[in-house]
Image (cartoon, rainbow, N blue to C red):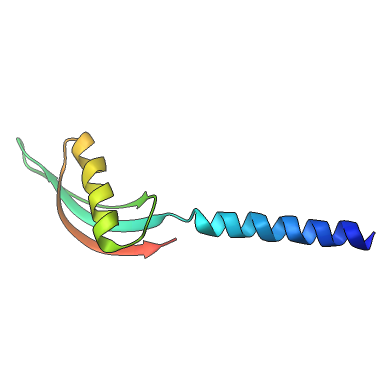
Amino acid sequence: MKRIAHIMTLVAGLVLASTAAQAACVVEYKAKRDNPLELFYDVTQVGGDCSVADATERLRRKLTKQGLTLLKVLSVTRQ
């Protein structure tokens, strides 16, 4: 019975560790779309490294696919 408890504790620890490693970055930003001019303020999640430069580049690619231009990243935080 103790062996099962130890195994379950180990499995739970591994699950929690893998979840923490996959945590997303939350980016607060301002963007625009031209013709007609539309301004956007939003908060979104991007995966990967939470460095400002990396998160900004991933966000820029994501917004470009939506026809938006990134104006400014206001904050980057790990969720």
